[in-house]
Image (cartoon, rainbow, N blue to C red; front, side):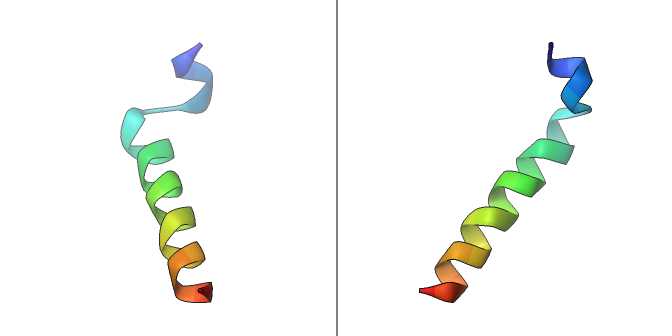
Length: 26
C-alpha cells in the first residue's frame, strides 16, 4: 500500500531527484 512507501512527498521528491540526476548526467 502507499503507506509502506511513506508520505507522498517522500517518493515524489525521490522521483523528481532521479529525473534531475538523469538530466544532469545527460
